[in-house]
Length: 109
Image (cartoon, rainbow, N blue to C red; front, side):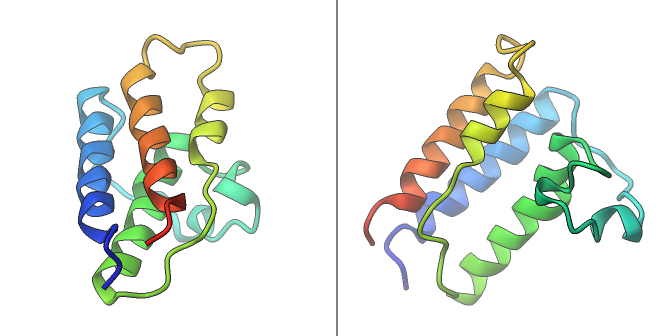
């Protein structure tokens, strides 16, 4: 098992918690069509928060739970910084958590 798995799993929970604190967590999933977008981050069909909740978090959880190989690179914080450039104060903690997730993911196991 990857030595980073525990810390990454904890960070996924912290990201989820922050989305809830910000009021960005949704109870109802987007449509199947919206979730199936071929565009990176589903930028044409989902907000970034929706992408985090419905695609990123579940996929990362599956990788961790199954012991599958983790990505060797991550740019999730950079994407979030672009999305929240007009409201950095509101998303400050989320940006910090995503940055730490990037760092944990790219550390050598």
